Image 1 (cartoon, rainbow, N blue to C red):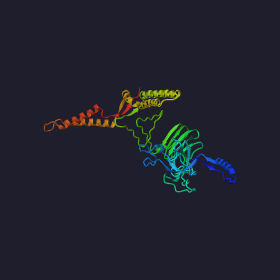
Image 2: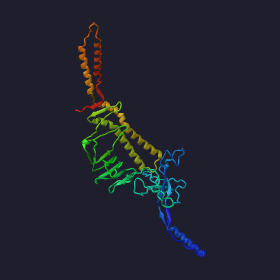
Image 3: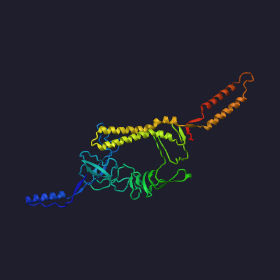
Image 4: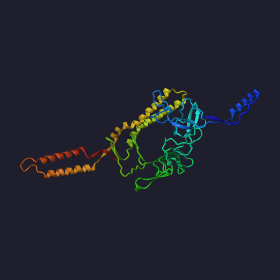
Length: 428
């Protein structure tokens, strides 16, 4: 907590004269009250961190559930003012000062404590070792400074404690486990955001060495190693987003759209294109009218949402006191419009299927098999006699005729057509 440290070294001697002693005492008290070094911030040694919801040891709400207002709170001891109390008095839990960006300490680390608005908060972890993995130095709040063994709250390895290399002017957020976000420049010419999980041992940003990376950059160039050794490296220039990892999964719950103005390239040792049950694979020239139909409804709803949002903003500007219910109703209207725009694509697919002028692809192996079967059956029919030597009808002849009818039925029902693979006919 904020505290004052007296700087007056000697106390005045008592006098035999009561009157002068009283005056001297008042003056000494006045001087003593003014003779302090005032400290706004004071370190707290962390003894407990409240993060485990399953084994919650903090306050609970009326229903007996963990009171999430205390999530991330700590318990500890003031290091300098050992008699100081935490506010509110009797609580003991110290919550983070910033509600948005939180850096949770571990037991044994020290944080900066402050008092505001009748409550004690903690802020920055004190960077005692300049080690992003841990800054543990226990025992500071005890009598004397005696470092003790760190409690096993985090995984500690020498390679996890290296600062990530950066350039002057960079903003770096570095975690405890060789991960970081760097907001800086690329080749000193354009803005860059680099996010990495699993830096290499040398602590640099290197797509070839780091485990998993996302680069978002305005200018400059990076080299991306192609897993196909026959194709060499890809040099990516200009504005770009590069994702690099052993496995990359893009999962769209409803729609995934990959689009490129000039080229969409898919390269892999094994490349598979599959569809879910009841679906289709559509290939062919870009069908602009179809895309316009798909986007028309969403655009209309999105424009309506923007219109409502502008009306909402104007209302807020012109109204001194907006009622809570009116505010809620306005937001609900915007939310509904956004949902309708998001789901509008599902309502247009039936129209798209009716309008699209398409042709189905031929399953060549299946067609060849059917054709060969027809030829064989016709040959066998020609070589098979109608009557057996005993004068009775030949049953094999009847079977061959039945088989040939079934094969012709395949032609009539187009069994050899891939109905799930559709090619859009090129416009003439």
